[in-house]
Amino acid sequence: MFFKLYQNAYSGLSKKSRNLAAVMFINRAGGMVLPFMTIYATQQLHFSITKAGLIITAFGAGAIAGGITGGFAIAKIGFYKVQLISLLTSGVFFIILSFQQSFIGVILTVILLSFFSESYRPANSTAIGYYSTPENRVRSFSLNRLAINLGWALGGGLGGFLAVINYHLLFWVDGSSSLLAGILLFKTFSSDRPVMLIKNDIEPVKQHSPYKDPVYMLFIFFCILVCSCFFLFFNMQALFFKTMWKFGEGLIGILITMNGIIIALVELPLIHKLQGKRHELYFMSFGVALFGTAFAIFNVLPTVPAVASLAVLVITFGEMMCTPFMDSFWMSRTDVSVSGAYTGLYAVTLSIGQFITPAMGALVIDEYGFTTLYWGLFTACLVAAAGFMALYLVRTSKFFYYRSS
Image (spheres, rainbow, N blue to C red):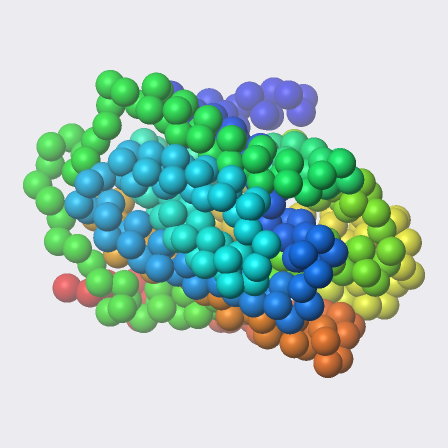
């Protein structure tokens, strides 16, 4: 029964969507530097927690610039070339980062690395929309997330064990996977490299401005809250488990793998069953509230591996109930053929979460500890959940369906 449901969830997706997922899997299978970056900075380079937070903030700053640039570059050179340049260049910078020992050297390299690596995000999202239909778009994004999380499970677990051997292996494997993903993209899309974003040779549609779409801007605001909480947890979880709960890198890697495996097994059939049952905003609200509950779990339950597993499980289901519908919602606000401005703003939203929270989170940890930080994240998630629910409740009003002329 489960396998039949899984097969049905995949049906109707284009070959190009599957190819994009394959590229994403290879790219993310090497994604092991960021989860362990705070441990590497504090334990190997002997930087303070504040400096480790600033490194992640630098990644966010480069990501914002990369997201904006990537969004504009789509209209100029096409999403294929943007993805290819991103993968090949970021692969090189991951390897360069392994040689940096000074704080300034790490910061500068991280900014350049994130600029190129995060320019991939808007181009990849636009490509998924281009090769999907309105009927299967949520499932196309879910397939891409399946690839991300399978790669995340493999990379996170492997990264934990490689870190025990030598931390520098993480950078080389991460860089090599990006280069390999770029080669696969080049090979699989060699005969189909669209530059313009117009489907079926139709007349270009006038570009909508996201800044004149009040619903989209409110959505973006609440997304910033959610992404800030998510990326702060993502970037600090390894340090939290290592320093506060005294877990080893191997166990931390297993917890990271657990998140990816659950999403890989459950998300696509779950989305297949839920799609169309309720509006996207309803599922976003529920998912964010669930995600926030995990922060309370960290604060009120004992510091044992079973509780860590429970929290990861809750976070994972919250993520599955939220992220695919966020991807679908932003595309529903514009015509996919001219979605560069919407894509770029949404990609920047994700990057803002990486920019504004790590240094702030590190300062909170230094001054007040992880307990205060997690209660703050719990509160922010509840605010975002309430915001999505408010948008859901007014979804049938004329205001909700407003479009710029």
